[in-house]
Amino acid sequence: MVDTDTPRPEHRGMHDTKTPQGANLGQIRHDWSLAEVEALFALPFLDLVFHAQRIHRAHFEPNTVQMSTLLSIKTGACPEDCAYCPQSVRYDTGLERDALMEVAAVRECALRAKAAGATRFCMGAAYRSPKAKDLAVIAEMIREVRAAGLETCATLGMVTPAQAEQLKTAGLDFYNHNLDTSPEFYGEIITTRTYQDRLDTLEAVRDAGLKVCCGGIVGMGESVTDRAKLLLTLANLPEHPESVPINQLVQVPGTPLNGAAPVEPFDFVRAIAVARILMPRAHVRLSAGRETMSDETQALCFLAGANSIFYGERLLTTGNPDVQRDQKLFARLGLKAETRPEQAAAAPAATDRAHVHETRPATA
Ligand code: SAM
Ligand code: DTB
Ligand code: SF4
Image 1: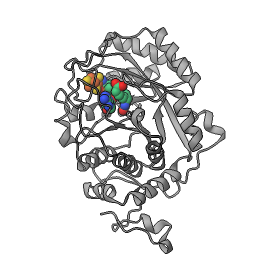
Image 2: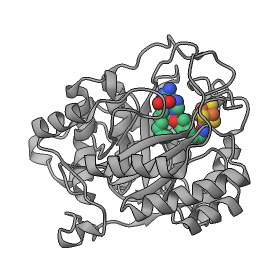
Image 3: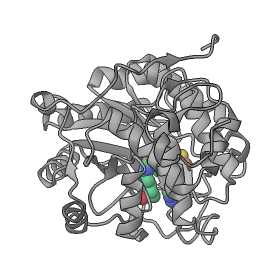
Image 4: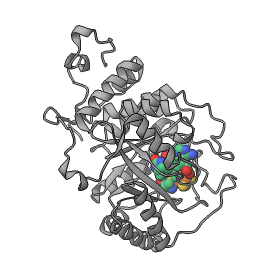
């Protein structure tokens, strides 16, 4: 169990991150228990955010945010039944369908995203899993986006080990595939593929040498325990995802989850903070949901360890704050955009990794 005592002034320093088992918060671990993660969620808000921010500063340059731009390269008519998703063929959301885009058009969008300040370009397709002929075209898109000087990410549904290899060969850097929620709540949201299917795709992606982008959604009617179980599942994977998107549900009329009880902003911030504590080296992305979020809530998310956003006025099919609003927010908070790793060589991150130890379960 995590020590929930509020640190007294004379005890500030390392002591306030000790758990009764002696494990310091901030270690890279893959053996979290549900009780420990639930205890983090139960911490007083300020203690939780304090721990998250301290851990964040031990691993990342503070005040720096990675910026990814999304593009829907194939829109709508998806056979899956994800209850949150405007792109499922099963729900009448009035969304216009679009076939797979032309490579040249994708390249144009990538160049615009780069000019606006993004460092990563994420191509999303409304597939259950990609077909061979589409994957060949997407491989070409990946080559073009890479040649334009951007990191590449794709989210195309389930992939086999061979497909993951093909994407890696094309130059893909990251593959996004979310677990979305806890194994227990999952069946309330999606019935057309299993949690194990998702874990299998993540394994294929990891085995192919791709970086993993995997997170979930808050605000679908799940309990705090479900949020804890989602983050526990991610943290106890053999390797932590390099990128952890925490989405707030974007409610879309026509989807079954339209009208779900909105998330209390502090609870959303808590999910960000726990993700940061459990996965200290991951980029935690404040993902969907920013359009309706106040600047103050976003600032709390950054304080709680979020250090990545989707940048540009569209997510896949729904809105996102426009570039002007984000630039103004960054200026108000003194935030700066993260440069790509190779660009950052001259300015190493303020890391303090000497004390970091990996703790894995014997079976991992
Ligand atoms: N079809 C692919 C798949 O499901 O893996 C890729 C695209 S899908 C839109 C990627 C992720 O976006 C989903 O797993 C979900 O976490 C997130 N997402 C989709 N609709 C959302 C919504 N309305 N609000 C928040 N997140 C959403
Ligand atoms: C992720 O976790 N969120 C992004 C990205 N990965 C693909 C998608 C959010 C989609 C929000 C609804 C839409 O715009 O269609
Ligand atoms: Fe299809 Fe992906 Fe939407 Fe699910 S989340 S309906 S798989 S596009």
